[in-house]
Image 1 (cartoon, rainbow, N blue to C red):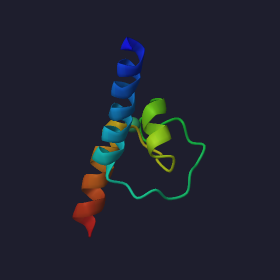
Image 2 (cartoon, protein in one colour):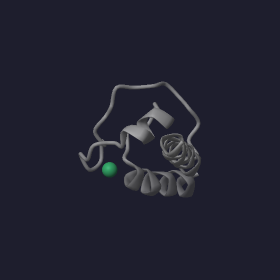
Image 3 (cartoon, rainbow, N blue to C red):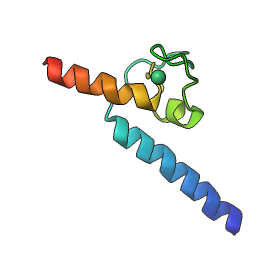
Amino acid sequence: MGDSIDYGNASAACYLNAALSKLPVLVPNAVSICIDCDDAIDACRKQAVPSTKHCSECQQYFDKQHHEGK
Ligand SMILES: [Zn+2]
């Protein structure tokens, strides 16, 4: 029972990560290293947002710049 609760929390974290990124799912890619800072992209985040090329930190900056540029 305890294991299933833990698993549920992990899944919720994945969904939260995806929701926070607010990215439309584009084309999935094989990028597993952030193109900005060379950090490994979190596997959970990559699963939730297969099209991402940024780690969650850089994605926040990227989104800001992208939205302000429009
Ligand atoms: Zn990064």
